[in-house]
Length: 263
Image (cartoon, rainbow, N blue to C red):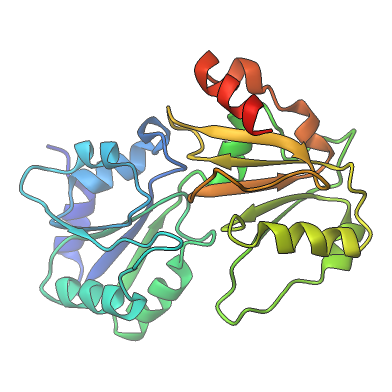
């Protein structure tokens, strides 16, 4: 078996950890490079939101360690995850940290890379397709469109210190807003945008389990969108480009009917 990652690990004087982005959900959206690196791993620390179909690329003898993090649920402490990465790397194991989406887009990959490098451990990053582009695309929503929007802004609905963004600046930017982890605070987010001057008629949607067979969504407006009946992981998209959503054709008929009822 071709083992480029393992070969590099053996040749290095310093231990190495590979941070891999598994993509937005559908395991077929994981990159070829990620699959090859995963197949060379001795130890894989895998996030809760990673589709377990991705682990089909891991070799049979690899140790798989669940270090889940899901909104609203008990999560593995970040400091503990980082200690495990350091421990196995120092044992000269080929260590992979498998994360949903892209490890450097609201995935704490930057924190983990910093913690590892501070301990003398090198880090390789294999990017993944982030939910912020892939999930809207699954409905036919382009997050950028030169006739409708100036750009796209990715933001989180849940910050470590509880700080809020400059809602007025976001409204003035006239960009598509893609909000990760925004379901629990959806009512507050929408109220803040309206208070900052956003037209309540602006199209908006919430998408749960994006790119998966059980994906569901509600397409509405800033004035009418609600998160009732939805659970994490979910993405919120706000802006004129949401008008491109192809709900009826993107999902099986039964799911489309359920979404229409929810709307």
